[in-house]
Length: 274
Ligand SMILES: NC(=O)c1ccc[n+]([C@@H]2O[C@H](COP(=O)([O-])OP(=O)(O)OC[C@H]3O[C@@H](n4cnc5c(N)ncnc54)[C@H](OP(=O)(O)O)[C@@H]3O)[C@@H](O)[C@H]2O)c1
Image (cartoon, rainbow, N blue to C red; front, side, top):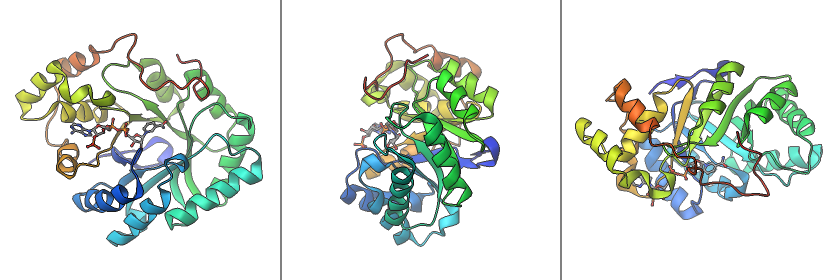
């Protein structure tokens, strides 16, 4: 598996997501994912499973420095001290003295963006966070975050799948040296059933899910997250680096984009999208 080097962050191109995964599932499936070879794990304060993620990672005996670990600060951490304290709590739960990437989970918050970027920078300076980034940011907000930060902003984690065109955000990331992490790649179950994707997959002996994960990581500076609580799908989702999509196949996947393709759009959290 290749790594994405944006601003020296070295992020494994395929990560394991833990959204909507209760502790028992994390403790059961994450060690298996790590055993299989996943070395990038994505969680968040709001997932309420950081302690289980920390326990699962520790149980494998894999050295901490071999795993790229991301968490995200929830929007209700308001005020510098409360923000920092919430990250200290995350580190304690995750059983580590640092995360590799800390993201602002959504743009809307009562804490001004300048103060949140300041807190991310302070955490980075203190060594508690190796890299800082954002999530669900529009191009305007990406520009703003970069302007307000001393340290490089290395990543924007966004909804991205074949039905949602993210050309503008990806172009802005390229312009700023940032990487993009794609979430919701299965588009709420639509991807595995898609006939166009199945047909492309059949030519390579792969499933529609594998085609889309491959499509994502084949794009410059794009990282894919994959979540599954189903053991039989772990190997399927990991096994995407032994085939290539042709330029025509890449275009065919891009061609599935629709104007109403966005799925995740909570009004109280989301920005004005591009
Ligand atoms: N920054 C944000 O705001 C944000 C928002 C959403 C997600 N995320 C992150 O991104 C990660 C990925 O997003 P996501 O959790 O929505 O996951 P996803 O990777 O898009 O897919 C999850 C769903 O697809 C199913 N699935 C997975 N692999 C499959 C396969 N090979 N064939 C058929 N179905 C398959 C899973 O079912 P089973 O589990 O039942 O197998 C699950 O229901 C999250 O876990 C989280 O870490 C971030």
